[in-house]
Image (cartoon, each protein chain N blue to C red):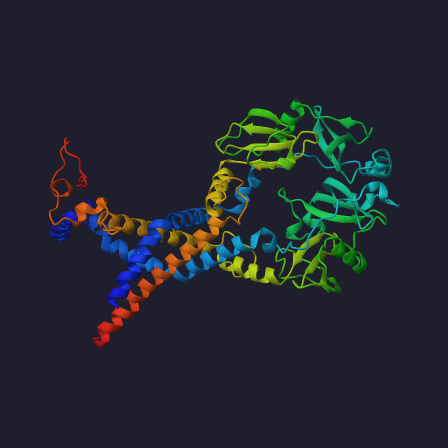
Amino acid sequence: MGRLNPFSRASGLTESTQRTWLQRSFAMSVISSLHRRAGLILFVQIIIWTISGFYFSWQGREALTANQYYHTLPAAPLAGMSNYATPDIHLARLGDVRSVSITLIDGIPRLEAEYVPALERGHETHPQTRNIYGNAVAWFDGETGHRWHTSAITAQRLAVDSYTGSGMFNGIKDIPRSDAFPSWAGPGFEVHFADKLNTKVFIDQASGIVLGHRNDPWEIADWMYRLHFMDYSGHRNFNNLLIITTGLVSVWFVLTGIMMLLRVWWQGAFVARASLPYNNALRSKQIPREASASEPETDNQPAKAEPKS
Amino acid sequence: MRFKALKNRKIHRWLTLLFGIQLIIWSITGAAMVIMQLPYIHGDHLVKQADQPISNFQLLDKIPELSFSFPNITEVRLVNRYLSGVFQHAFVVSDNAGSYLLNAETLSVISPEEEDIRALAVRFYNAPSSNPGADIAEVSLLSEEAPRELSIQHLPAWRVEFADNRGTTLYLGRDTGDLLTKRHNSWRVFDFMWMLHIMDYDERSDITKWWLQFFSIMTLLIAISGITLLVQKLLVRPWRRLWGD
């Protein structure tokens, strides 16, 4: 690009036709054009990024996860269980079981078995029940020894236990799955509370796990997520091709912007007040020799013009 | 119109000069973070299963006895874990104070030693194909202070560093030998970028800092002034050229 100096503008222009293709590519007109074209592609998304980013910051993590009225009760001691039966046969049928844990869910012992799934046996596990080792999970009732099955009454109690708001219980319905939890395969329950946020609590039927809360402000946050990450399916795919491509274009956009800024800075565009002593050289009709780029710098002479008093 | 364009250009330049640095940081960190695949950043490839299959489910019949002997326990987990040089069944028991190990046969407390942790870490560690013989570089016990990359709620814990080019570090529970979390250099880079992106330079988790909101508004103004320039360049000027205004 050579020296970009406001005082060498005339000499720079005379040789424009003799530049190599590389020099022409880095010419400011090309960079400006690239910046404008990238801006044309990006301008809607940049506004979306800033607005959605501001919304995330303004709302905070609690509102974004719909946890305004969410809390977790301390786990109940196992000493409180009345009956217990180990589902030995069911566990043995799972095959390669790596861990079995027991907790109390609504006063009933629930066993959670993590196992390496044997696909030929026809065990169906949902993707969200796999851990990092690819283990599947199965749940059993520690009172009956059978597979765990959350009843509507238990689901209602679990939902009320997870809720700290002032709203009253306002109904429960069976749901096969829900868009509010895209990676959850269902089925389960949706429990409604009559509060100003219109809170809904989601419970998984196969495990009795409280999946989480959802409410009206979360609907806005969900769309902000979709727009921010350009994942319009709502599956929270952070690494989709569209966002990666747009991210790269945005880097191109800011880099060309930086180059343009450096150019106009060097040209003296950022002059706050002409009366400042710093700007004496710019106001002066006589251009100091030291500041001219056409003049080769010597070792003894500073390149910048000294401000005159 | 020309005057307006000049004014907008000046506003755009000044706003970008003063507040554009964060837009640059957001663009670069944002692009880098979406390119890095999340499972990779989480380090799922760093570890493999260390516990063996459970061969004796009758041990679960001891749960009522266990809950009678230890009335405060809230969760019991049966595992087949490598302890004291052999695989043995053990209960990982949790109460409000924390978690610890019990021998599943005798219900006596097991306290893993450093050698047990080393042996477990090697079994958890999934060595890279480029460096299959990577060994443990350093093991240290964290009791009071956690490094930035480990939540303080995991303490006390063992930190096991491996001598590989990924900078793999595994954190294991002091009293259970459970794998608490895993970290590597890419995670650390990602975490640094996340810090720059959300502008929380201390805890790296608070997204509600006022300066983040301030820079968001300034960036929006930069974008609006830039769009105005684009409109002037792409619409107004050709319109005037067409109609000879």
